Amino acid sequence: MLTGVVAGAVFTSPAVAGTLLIVKNYTGDRLSFGLALERARAMGADVRMVVVGDDTAFAMPKKAGRRGLCGTILVHKIAGALAEAGASLDVIVEKVSAATKGLGTLGLSLSPCSVPGSKPTFQLAADEMELGLGIHGEAGVRRMKMLTADEAVEMMLTHMTDPSNASHLPLSPGASVVLVVNNLGGLSCLELSIMAGAAVRCLERRGISITRVLVGSFMTALEMAGVSLTLMLVDEELLGLIDAKTTAMAWPNVATAPATRMSRAMPPPAGPDAARVQRVLELVSSTLLAMQDRLNELDRQAGDGDCGHTHARAARAIQEWVRAQPPPTAPAQLLSALADLLLEKMGGSSGVLYGLFLTAAAQPLLRSTGLPAWADAMDAGIEAMQRYGGAAPGDRTMLDSLCAAAQALHSLRSPGATLLPVLTNAVQSAEAAAEATKHMEAGAGRASYIRGGCTPLIPPHPINKPLWSS
Ligand SMILES: *[C@@H]1O[C@H](CO)[C@@H](O)[C@H](O)[C@H]1NC(C)=O
Ligand SMILES: *[C@@H]1O[C@H](CO)[C@@H](O)[C@H](O)[C@H]1NC(C)=O
Image 1 (cartoon, rainbow, N blue to C red):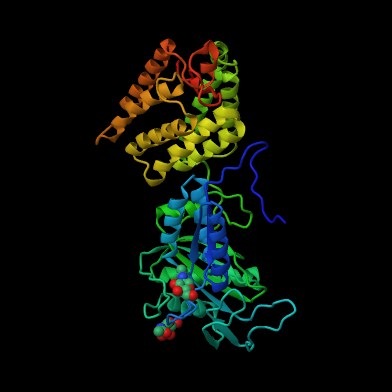
Image 2 (cartoon, rainbow, N blue to C red; image 1 turned 90 degrees about the horizontal axis):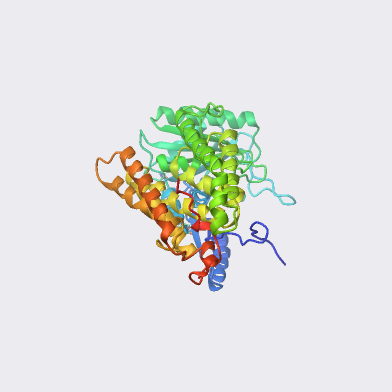
């Protein structure tokens, strides 16, 4: 009757921006998921599909094409991290599709897989191995005599990167890769680690820069005693997405492993950047906490008198969060994480408004973290609040201050802009704009219900509160 459900918090709708189907390139899968996509679209859902074909086994283009293999897990990770950072479905599809162009996988096995109740799909003698298998028990492209681990890996990488093979992955010295050494199901940890060690040595001999090594059982084929190697060509951005924290239990968190070595690094001590972010967030939080009574007092005159409490709740949540672990230092990830935190912990319309602001502000910072991007971030955040909140500057909401500050931040786009004077100016502009709201009529938000000014067009929310006024 029901095979899946997406739930929001109690009494709230889940935020579903769209759906991405990540499909491994098998005819049956393409057909079934294609059908699901068409039907979901017919019902009005925004659904896209990315087909992954990372197989490098075939020498000649075959009718069946490149199959989807273990490289797909990197595609999941990248798409997931982008979605987590609030990227749009269009951006996710575009980045993920680009990433699959630099992706290659090849499998090698000492045994067929073991399908319960069935005979093996192929037979291998005790001293034979099979190259280029699929993950559903299909036989490979080549059978050969047993080799040592180093020889086997050398042969696999040669096959994967041989330019005369139609499905090869172009790999030249100096390229940066993420390496996945995947257990096809039946290898011991010892055997898997020996293969991983051999793969690292072999790639280093070829002058490849191995940025991360993931070793484990990521995509198995029912007890097959084999291994697959996956290489993905990466740049800083892709690497950041692969490193992005996840709570998925099976994902090895090797994010901080030093490049080129397989050492499973300890979690990092908070770096200087994380410590700085932490100090700034502490300062913002303690400032808000100190203003609690004053904010409540102002709100008693304009609303329901809890503005200080709401912001104190947010401030304490931020304090607890930064004290529990070093905050992310990448700006986009930091803003997205703060958005999640405020949505969850601050609650109410304020939490949603700040969540919207921060989620939208994170977008321009995904592409660049230079000073102009911060001006873009502020504009994007304000734009999102206006779009969904329905207020405009002049309505005596927090937008009056925010827009004044944003205007001042536009100077960051001039070449040679220096941060401090621009920020000082932005703060002064915001304060002046907040002060000026004293003489305005409330046009939106909760204050517009009081003193019977305008007819409110939107449900009450506390953006009218003069947060930034001192
Ligand atoms: C998937 O396989 C088909 C053939 O079945 C092939 O034409 C196509 O290029 C493959 N797609 C990818 C993404 O490799
Ligand atoms: C494909 O790669 C293998 C190396 O594993 C090589 O023997 C073969 O000649 C290559 N090219 C073709 C067209 O098969």
